[in-house]
Image (cartoon, rainbow, N blue to C red; front, side):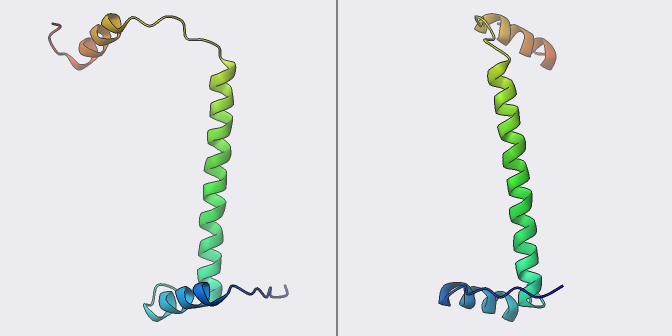
Length: 83
C-alpha cells in the first residue's frame, strides 16, 4: 500500500515533534494511526447517540409525571424511609 503525504503546518508539526520527543509515540505514522482510531471511535459514538436520540423522539410523549410517585419509587428501590 502506498503512503499518504499530508501537510499539517507548523502547529501540528511542533505537536507531533513533542509527542515523539516525550516518547508517547514511536513514529509520526503511529501517532496518526492512533489519532484516526480515536476519531473513528468518536464518530461511532456520535452515530450511536444520534440513533438513540431519534428512537427516543419517535417513542412519543412519556405522559404526565408525578414527582411524588417518582420519589416514592426511588426511595423504595434504595430502601430509604419515605417522608
